[in-house]
Image (cartoon, rainbow, N blue to C red):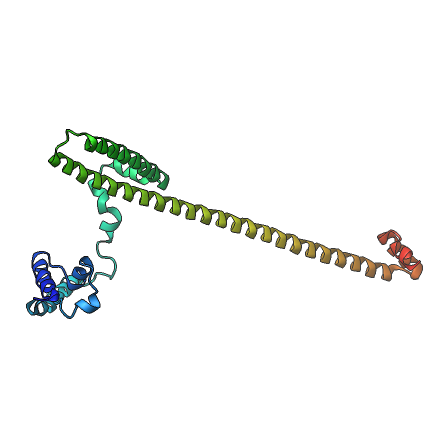
Length: 237
């Protein structure tokens, strides 16, 4: 019997017991699915049953008339979920929990697991520990190491998330400050432009009025001198 025959027999056995599919079976056993799918296949009887299963799933998924798409069980999703299993006090604590709280909890778990691992190692070093007890200790040690790895990974993930949030917050603050600064400068420029235009209009109006009232250029020159503090004379000289 070839290797593929053995693997096919093993797949059929596992499929009968757990319903595992060919792709998952190949991943679990380190096989290339593109190569193995020629040999690792579902029985023909299972292939015939699949359309009925899909048809049944389609019928079950149909909504009743009058129900808008996407509104099914929305109330349960919003107001139900896991919260219905907890008391109000627990729900309040959950809502008040932050990423910093979870980070502190994970770090505390790491210290607790390391302390437990230290105790297990001491018991394993004890010469009076028999083989069966040592085997159980090794199993506990393996679980503790797995828990340690999970918590370390979670700590790294939380720290990265907090760092990204802080970076986004700083960038958002800088953007708001820069936008405010540009807005203030724009308002000041517009105000200065309007003020200069208004002053020019007033000066032009007064000059026109003076020309009408003046009987000669001397009065007009005197008026201009009074408005410019004799600046035109300095320039002309």
